[in-house]
Image 1 (cartoon, protein in one colour):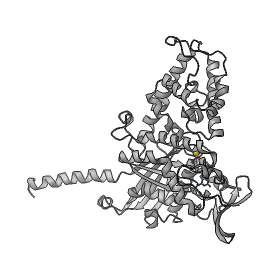
Image 2 (tube, helix red, strand yellow):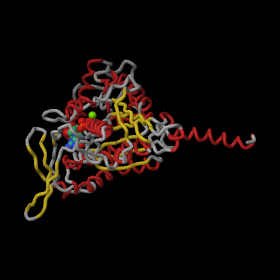
Image 3 (tube, helix red, strand yellow):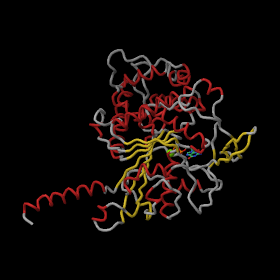
Image 4 (cartoon, helix red, strand yellow):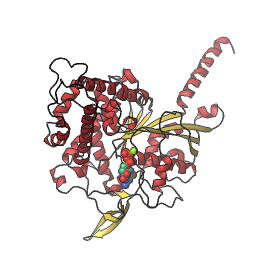
Length: 470
Ligand SMILES: Nc1nc2c(ncn2[C@@H]2O[C@H](COP(=O)(O)OP(=O)(O)O)[C@@H](O)[C@H]2O)c(=O)[nH]1
Ligand SMILES: [Mg+2]
């Protein structure tokens, strides 16, 4: 071969190995989020459990190709590489699910992670080229509160603008009533008041109590700052001791030793370190993202809760419109390429309602999905149950077949009911006359000889990891 001939070959080899490295990227960082109680902990616990079971050839995962085709060799948990991040409590979660009586994993309130190694037979010509067909994929699963994503818009707001926004929210009488203990905690407060640590702490505490109350009694999820309700490692830290300013503003510019100035400083610190810090240190490293949505809860809480959830998800999903146009792409360079929306707890409705549940999810996430697609992210939506607690049973009622859900309530009492029909979009007035019946089931007793029952976790696995396991 002449030199002239070899050159393109050499180049081709080089290109091939770059391509090999890229397509054999052996590492996926998979983030799981959603508002609190959307089912993140249950999802991750169940997913890891199903993966481990699949490694033992016990899989019930027909929609997950690598497993269904018998190419999966094994999955094991391996030590995580980021030592400063708390470990996801997988063992405790699984122990709760296998307890007597079985229970749901205890809630977590911050960020945690876990690392898995998957081994499989690859069909990829490049693996064979590199010698051998046993391939390896490392998957890091990261759990973090969706509430933290609600803080993104704060990065573009000043303390004064944010305070103004909260003032506008409080035009709603129900919210204003809940905010009274905070607003009236200190009589005669104004912009001239000197900074006082104890006062700052009690105002922040009253504001936090208000946020919790709005969430608990009115079903409101639109909570800022997100870490006030889910502080992670920052519970009680001074950086969380401020509130928006709803009292008379300082007459001139705020004096440096005023409470107003201190709140403003803490707000800036919160933005810079907690909000931007999260995007920079964590969000920017995610490859794939699952967003869990509990579509059923607002269907029991009323129209305001539904609208609030729609708005909250819209805000949360702004974090995924980073393509060429996102103003903060320049700051954090995120790289998520697949985004899965999942309606959780699908075992709380009868199978004939799964189509309606999927339509509800679509309606709640419509804007975010369109934007993510526009940014070139692959987007999918589905319904799932991480752990199927309900069983379906068809009986005859008034001469017609009726499917009911059977299970055990959280208090241990047996449950058998037809929850009702779901709307397929924003519920109208007629829906609210006969809303679905609330259901909260305890996981079923499980004999541990096979995998836990689930709904469509395999569909999720195929979307999230299928292309990496060819
Ligand atoms: N029936 C059923 N309930 C679920 C499922 N996943 C979560 N839940 C319920 O939702 C609650 C909150 O779930 P969790 O995973 O702690 O939510 P997180 O706050 O997002 O981590 C659990 O305690 C269960 O009661 C599921 O797949 N099926
Ligand atoms: Mg959790």
